[in-house]
Length: 158
Length: 342
Image: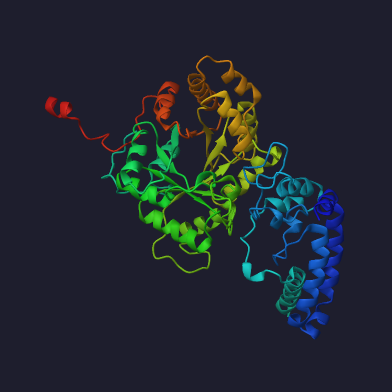
């Protein structure tokens, strides 16, 4: 919902904090996800992720979440799906060129990032979207990566 | 500016050390000359002569010509088509590629095709939304954005590979451009966004129409402070300018063309003039002269949509070429009279 997602961006710092607590918790649950099987938990987790992030961010389930790099403003709500900043068409009042009634997603992203500790991540160039990952869980992907990195570090120490 | 190794039209110049392309635009910019570029209005026609005619009006006044890619989301002859025709005559082209109409498979093919046809400059754009054009019912593609397009084009050139990693037998030798709009919010981010484009591979920038010189000055100061105008990966900035036909058309552009910011003072100046069209040209010349004085500016990009015939006069009167005659077909061929004298 538009009003909710605007509210979230205004409180981007809090949501950054919440996510930074949440991420290690679900990452610790890696043995559980692995036990049940990542492919088997994919659908229920994706459903939860869609519900939660859909409500808060109008998440479009691109499957490669960039929210922590975009001031908690989802770039997939940009009508041009820009992943790297605003286009040149932003109106004088900060609204979207394509949808004049909507505030520019990237104007919001800039404001949101300014309040966040990791706000400077907005300056990093994002890769283009991998459309194969659509409708899959971004959380599980991150968790799996963290677990694999931890595993790799352990192996390296041995 | 005449190069000793001036080739037969249609053939590329040799690539100089520290250069990435065999093009004239890169040479002029790296030589520190004030560059002038303009934009051809691509015809709604399949007649090649129409393209040659529209290019010839810039002869002797511009260092490169942009071929737009469905500008304003309106349908015209394709940029690769216009470029193919004009590079055959030796023109230096800036081929614009917008992400609106094609996915990454088509775009990467276009880069190779353009480069093979002698295009030395590629301008990576996101593109206007389809709602702005004559086919608002079309599907907007936007598989890439201008930033990821820059990265892909740079990897094709420098690493000789597609985004997929598959190797290219011969990479495209292209000078990479991008757009920036210092006149649209969020203002404080615009210079950082430029830095991001430089990081993604941009080497020259053509901006949206500038009618607000103080804003441009602030932007340029930020760009200088970020160190973007120094070193081998420096960026060359060509602010966009153009003549306004009348106060009425200026108001219309302000309200209907995405991203164009025209201050009230400009509209007032036009409205108060007896001959508005003349005043529009004068205003454009004044802007060029003011912009040229800004530290770090490398040239201007003159966009005279539907007034292309005024470009020569504007450049001539502004005096920015300082007597330099940019190459055009026939420039170095002696005329009949010179031949008789010789």
